[in-house]
Each structure stands twice: as structure tokens, then as C-alpha cells.
Image: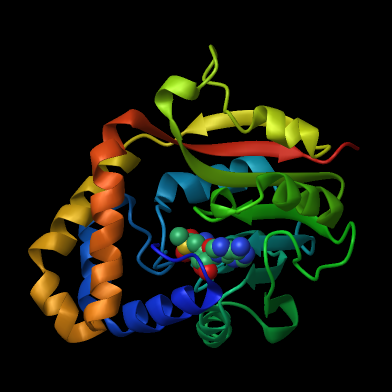
Length: 255
Ligand SMILES: C[S@@+](CC[C@H](N)C(=O)[O-])C[C@H]1O[C@@H](n2cnc3c(N)ncnc32)[C@H](O)[C@@H]1O
């Protein structure tokens, strides 16, 4: 997103939420990997949802936090699938409002809460989370060390983090090690495995191409500003798609 402010995300979320076509373009871009009910504002293929379950293994009743939750889909899906209690945090009040509305269809109200907060000031209690997820969000943090230190504070001892990030493939370590490994350690977290997410570059490429192709209809549904923001993202990211590698990076708080 061009200007990284909560207000810019508010406007984008309100506009995107109005567009049925954008949802269809997202679905077509991810094809059979698209979890329609989740309707992510991210790259959140079915294989990532499966990976979340397998690598976090949240116990029923335990506390799950979704950082940069957007409209809430990935966290709602995971909390319903695993019987956990969900807190979604995002700095966009508009996103949090829409996520709250969506939550009724997914979880009993006692098991779900959405609140505004930033990556480095979530407003959550210390050691209150058993699992933390962040889908295409935490990597946007302006101060990654502050954001990871906040995750470390919020996780209970032994609690687990899984977040997605696109990284330059050339910057990965010999065993596919993430460039986030050192920042995770510096924040007091124990780095875990990085799982490659194949096909994300192609899916983003298809999405950006279809946004260009359908920009007239998108302008009618979302307005010019939101459409131009998406087109600017396409222009900025598309040239680098082949150089990037998408992965889900795991870590845990020391037990
Ligand atoms: C690409 S969207 C992903 C949303 C959601 N995780 C999903 O998968 O649908 C990135 C999200 O990060 C949020 N975000 C960006 N910077 C943030 C910050 N500094 N603090 C909290 N949230 C932030 C945005 O508002 C947006 O909802």
C-alpha cells in the first residue's frame, strides 16, 4: 500500500469490501488453493491454513492472536477449526469493524474479540497468547525489532508464532533459512522452521494482471483512489515477483 497509515488502510478496506469483482479476481488468482469462506486480503492458500494447524497445534480453549488481522478471515478460520479463543488486532478501525461483523457467523461471541492496536503496541496482556499468527502483515512493521519484541512479550513461555513473509530468494540461508532468523533471536524468540509456500508468486502475478485487465469495472465498484492504490501495488511488486520467495516463518517463546 502506497501510504502506510491506518487511515489509508481504512479507506482501502471499505472500498475493497464493496467490490464483489475483486473477491472474484482473488479467487481466480489462487484457484483451487483459494479458501472462499476466509476471503483473505492476502496470500492465504489452503496449504497455509493446513500448515497453521500442523505447526501451531493449538489446544482447544487456548488463546490465539491474529496480528494485522485485517477483515479477520484467517484467524476466524483457525479459531473455529481448533476450538481456540481468538483476539484479532489491526491498526485499521474499519477492518476491525468489518471483522467484528463477520465473527458472528463463525464463533460464539465469548470466544472472539477484535481490537485496534499496532504491531509494537497491541494492547494485549503479557504472556496472554498461546499462539500468534500473522498473514502478510507483521512483515509490514515499520520497526521489525519492536514488533517481534511485542510478540515475545505477548506469547506465554513455549507459545508459538507463525507468520508469512515474502523475501528475496537470494537472501535465504543455505538450508532455506529465513532472513528473519536473526531478528527473531534478537527479540528473544527461538527461530523455527521456514516453510516454503509454492505458487504464491504466480498467484500474485495473476491477481495483478487481472486487476489491470478489469480496472474499469473496479473503478466503478471501488472508486478511483482504491483502484489506483491496487494498481500502484501491482506496478511496484510485479517486477520483483520472480526474485521473491514466499514462506511461513515459525518461532516460539523460550519455555
Ligand atoms: C495484507 S493485509 C492482511 C490482512 C489479513 N492478515 C489477511 O490475511 O486477510 C495487512 C494488514 O496489516 C495491517 N497493518 C499494517 N501495518 C500495521 C501496523 N503497523 N500495526 C497493525 N496492523 C497493521 C493492515 O491494516 C492490514 O489489515
